[in-house]
Structure formats: C-alpha cells, structure tokens
Image (cartoon, rainbow, N blue to C red):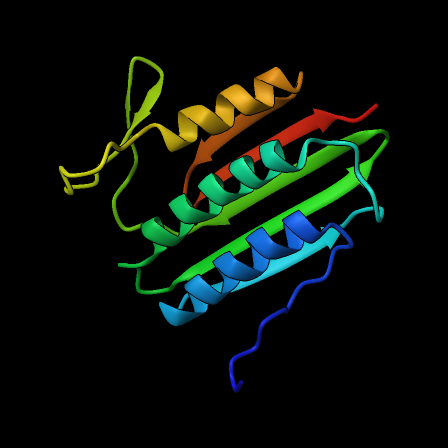
Length: 149
C-alpha cells in the first residue's frame, strides 16, 4: 500500500500502464525517470503498437542507464499537427554498437535473444508510416514522428 501505483495519467489506459510500470522499474533501480506528455484524451494509434514501441524503448533506456554515474531517462510525447512525436533520451555507460546499420545488443545473457527490441520498434514505426532518428552523443536519443489520421 505504501508503493505508488499511478504517477502518470495520460487518458490512455494502455499508455498509462506501460509508462507507470516502467517508471516503477526505473525508480527501483535508482534511475530518474522524467516524463512530459501532452496528448489528447484519445489518440488513434493501435494500443498494442504504442505499448510495444514504448515498452522496448524504455526497457532499453533502463538497461543502458543502470551502470551510469548519472542515471536519467527522459520520455517526451506530444501530439501536434496530426502527428504523434515520441522522444526517449537516456545516459549510457557502454556506447551502442552498430553493424551494417543495425544496433547490436551488448548484453551478455546468452539465454535470451537480444537486439530484436529496437528492430521491432523500427518496424512498428515504419508500419505506421512514421519516421525515426537515432542520435548518439552525450546521450542516446531516439525520436520518432507517427502520422495520425
């Protein structure tokens, strides 16, 4: 009962569940998780697509941030001009590896397949006629724009 259950309320129950679950996980690992979401109460995107995109992006951000001196994740979502903008920024301790244009997982756990989450995100965004960009500087920054009907 002492644990907070819902921090973020967007008006979309699936989005709320994903973000609040990931925020709880980040806080358990002492990662600062900042969220800025400005969406209408009902966005026209498949909830499962949105859950998959956000779930994978935030899971990756949490994993990358765990070993950093400054553990911080920023999630921004905005709806403007009939488009949904998503941006996830996070610190990282191990620079992501890119081979042949694909991001390769640097996880060491051989029991689970790795490196497919970001590919699934990219595919889902393309299937929604969206575009995305990845920038790796001081932080790992994933940004996407998905058109909304």
